[in-house]
Image 1 (tube, rainbow, N blue to C red):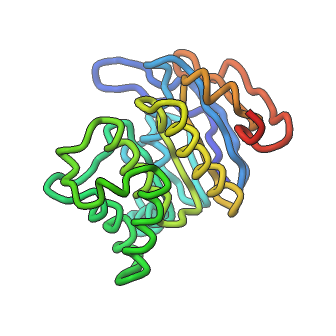
Image 2: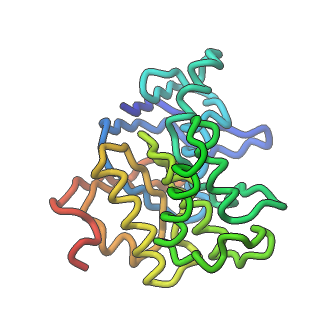
Length: 230
C-alpha cells in the first residue's frame, strides 16, 4: 500500500513542488500519473524512493514511513523496488549487461541466472547487439532501455517508472510498456509517470493528473490491460 496524506514538498528556494497531495495506491495496482513537466511527478517519485523527505504531511510505502528515520527499513524497501529514473543513473565504464547485472547482484542473484536474466531483458528491448558496449557509448534512447531492463529484471514488488518511454519510437515504447504490464501481472505495484500521448491513449488503468503539485483528476480503470488491444 502507498498512502500520502497532505503531502507537501517545498524546496529551499521556495518552490512548492507538492501542495497537500492525497493519494492511495493499493498493492498490485497499476497507476498512471500524467502532468506537464514541473507538475510534481518527479518530486513525488523522489519521495517514494526515499531520496527526499516530505516538508509536511505523511507518506507511507509498504508500511515504511518515508519521513521517518528507520534507515534499515528504508534500505530493505529499496531492495524490493525497481526504479526507472529520467536521468537513468547508469554506471559509466560498465557495459550495458554489467549495469543490468548490478541491479540483481545486490539481491544475491549471481552466476548464470544473473547473466541469463540480463541478456533476456536486453534482448526484449532490442539491445542484444549492445551487450558489451560501455553505457557512455550508447545513445540516449539505448541508455533509457538499459535503465528499464535493470529496474525490471530484478523482479521488484514496486516499480516506479518516470517517463520510461520519453526518447523511444512507438515499437520500443510498446516493448517497455509490455514489460511494465508483465511486472504488474505478476503482482507488482506499478506507477508510471508520463505525459506521452501515445502511452496514455493505450492505457486502461487508473490515471491521476497532477498540476502544480496537486491532483486535479483521478480517473478509474476502464477494464482490460492498457495497451493490449491498441
